[in-house]
Length: 443
Image (cartoon, rainbow, N blue to C red; front, side, top):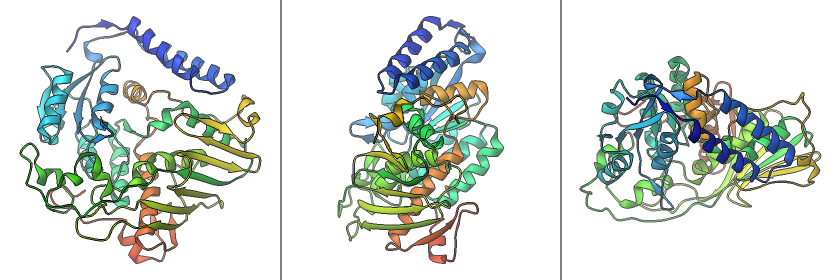
């Protein structure tokens, strides 16, 4: 444990950076002023010092997974470990190179594990960051909650719908903080768009477009010799046993249904989440789903996810969420009075006045966070729910899974009961809500 440390200077520096980011976000002046004032108020409530008993010890499970040269799990761990009063004390990864590199980064006293269960057994670890491939998210998150750890888990939270229901039940009984890595919820542009929609700025909403990138196709891939620095059978875990190929590993695992859901879950878990946040259905879901898409390559050992797709999700009030691989990457809400488009770098409206006019003091305001990692740590300290908890993460992933199920059923129109989380009158679709998983990792 560390001695008590005065974080006043670094806290001020972090707040200054946060405010600078808010001011540079391209938001109207009235919204920027509100966000900055709220950020200062939250920061003023933090303690000036953290003593030895205040330190939050974090263990990272899965620090590899290169995507465009960037390791997702490592990036999450760096951001969370960089919060005040937080220390990364343990690293777990099946890849020897990733495990050793990450441990070296966080210091010579960082413990290293291959088995996540050994990391979870350490009593001095308060919280974990899960940055594994998607098929491992729920088994590890369930084990972490049972071990009494707070959980930050990358998106998409789940591999299939049934395991998400079980995870939510475990989360609700755990008393732990759970943050899903849907960081767009901590972006002021997305929050503003959703607040305007929720408060009727566009009038009655008729449609939402969630525009995602196009997924890759590839294969067939030849079997390769097993690597010496990776336990391949353990990496597969609950997934079916297959021959090793590098085209199933790290970032490209996303293009195999055994481990993920393709672009539908990779980007869809972000943009469908924002669509549901704006519609106020983020703890519910659509009632019908119909998809059209270009299937994956046919053949042994080819990518199995859909590269091109159009999915119409209809909600109980008649609003249609259209998710596709076409159009400018982002989310666009359409209503009686115009439209609002939002992405990670932009917010704009069909009429600038839709953004420029301040919301009234009586307006509905959404959960505010301008830093996803900071929100996770603040919620642990305050013992309150994070901005994207396990239920929200499960529901957002479920929308993506519903689209994939319709695609796999050749575009069949599906009827979904979001309360019971059950397909109506379609046993074949209902069978896809769950999967057979290899023991001992089945949830």
